[in-house]
Length: 552
Image (cartoon, rainbow, N blue to C red):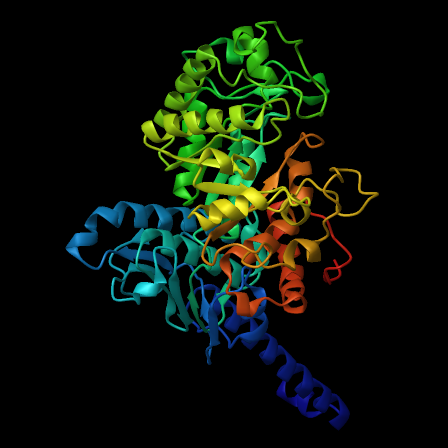
């Protein structure tokens, strides 16, 4: 063999030398890949810009990019928890639950084991309660740091840790939202960064109407998942309307035997048992969303009247089912003793089933009730809610009845006068202006889903307003924002998604992020990157032209 090689031409020997170099290089690459896959090599440096501030929705209070390599999740990564004091031991279960849900979400796409262990020191992702954080951090604020050694999320309360885990998910590649293992997935790397964050408003919510079209508990859980991604903390459930009654009240069985049997378009409808509702509440609580149940009174009550005719002032049975979408034609008798016995039964059961502090009594579009009778009805039902240990919430029309937490929706001329006067007396306001936040409004006039009575709402319209200054209200009276999603034209989870996404993140940012960070140009660039997350998760969304989506 040596004599034959020695006899090769110089050109052939040079070619063989090049081939040897290429083979050795390829071998080195393969060995390097093998070492990385076994978790024995550090992750390469990651550019912080496009993977930190430019990917987080809602935008945080502050983001400071770090230097050096980021932290790469490997088969050695653990999620670590530990309360920092004996006084916080009672919260250890909540913290562990947050860690388990994070681990479950990230295991699915990555295939990594991600054990949840104590103590918090060591390689991996640490979730730590730290009462030494500034008091301004509040219960929902958090601090997230990432470097080559790991990721550390600290907060004063478990709720803040949960909000921080949602930010962490956004800092990972978008495929992390996949419900199944990602074949040939990316490196699961977090860029070096420090995030300091807390919310602007204490109330940030979305409403789902399950009365016009019914949705199952599993479908509502999917809705909750989408809210949690964007740090919302309230789920308002519109449980009753003219077309259907959707919650079991044992003392009033006809409400579900009759009133739950239909919906818009005449399809069968349905209802939740007490156990169904409590499962929804439990699922929401795990994701730090407070459920706000709504029984709409005295109007929007046709389903109740069909179930119990004595609730009508005439005592006449209402035609059933009602499958249309008109409003304002139905009302409970606002002065009848039977009606207040009915509302007492309903309020007591909802208060028993609902651990959160709020109970919504509706109060909108009661067009057939005289103003004085309406105000007295609202006052009496509000007292029933308080007697049951809850705080009453009402649409802005309930202001004359003394409701102290009012939800503004009707922005037509002259409709907000009583709201402004109530705010001067100390009432607080949740902003849900129909022309900005109603997610059942069409994106544009030709869109196949939704309505247009409040106008059309594209993504910029949903984003470009300030809850504090939309109305001339007393300083400090606005406590938050909510995005209602009415379902007259929506009857599948996919249709809900199309109306939620991409507008829900716009309203979530209004509720969470500081006013000084409000910038449409920067927001739409960050929002465009969310499309890859939704596609990985299997969520439907509308690729609106005002958002610069990347090419698929």
